[in-house]
Amino acid sequence: DVKVTQSSRYLVKRTGEKVFLECVQDMDHENMFWYRQDPGLGLRLIYFSYDVKMKEKGDIPEGYSVSREKKERFSLILESASTNQTSMYLCASRATGAGELFFGEGSRLTVL
Amino acid sequence: GDSVTQMEGPVTLSEEAFLTINCTYTATGYPSLFWYVQYPGEGLQLLLKATKADDKGSNKGFEATYRKETTSFHLEKGSVQVSDSAVYFCALTYNTGNQFYFGTGTSLTVIP
Image (cartoon, rainbow over all chains, first blue to last red; front, side, top):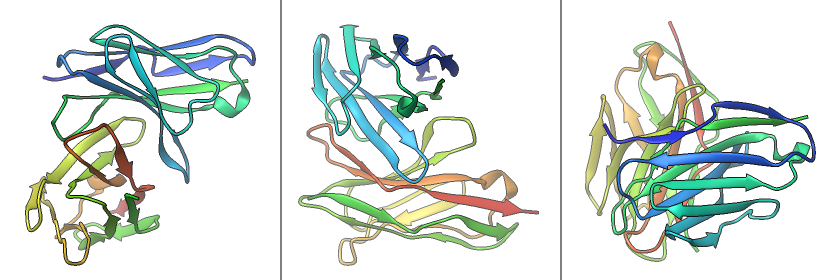
């Protein structure tokens, strides 16, 4: 069964902390994505990566960075968490030239 | 540019009622169209897709037809169940590039 796995389902952090969200896919997909989901705003793309060590900014990259050192793993980093980064974070992957995105189960982050 | 507009929710239906969730799109090329479903506390799962005009996607009793003349991809189900309660997202993408365009989601609640 194909899978995108996000390391933490629920996290609670304090303002100013560094936060790592990890995502691993087992489908050998070239492309990986981080989205943020907020009520009324739908899904917004933070960053995506089309190859190891390659990344592109999405619609809302401010306050975030990413790392892709291995093909199967894509990490989202909040250098200094703020309360307005409280959200659901969704990782996804996709094969090049293919259609659908495959999503992980999401990581719900609360920043106090 | 490309975009997806879907009907606002929330939608509340009784069990066995007929469901329609409207989705229209604006596209600069010839996209593939998708419906994703998100159950409470989970990530998005692909429900169905259509890759060209007049294609019909279907899965789990849900159907949607890719209508180029009306730029629409409405989701329908003849008889909803309580277990269909979820948020439904319409989306489009192209096989080249990595842009996915999502609607803002429609929340469906089915009551017994």
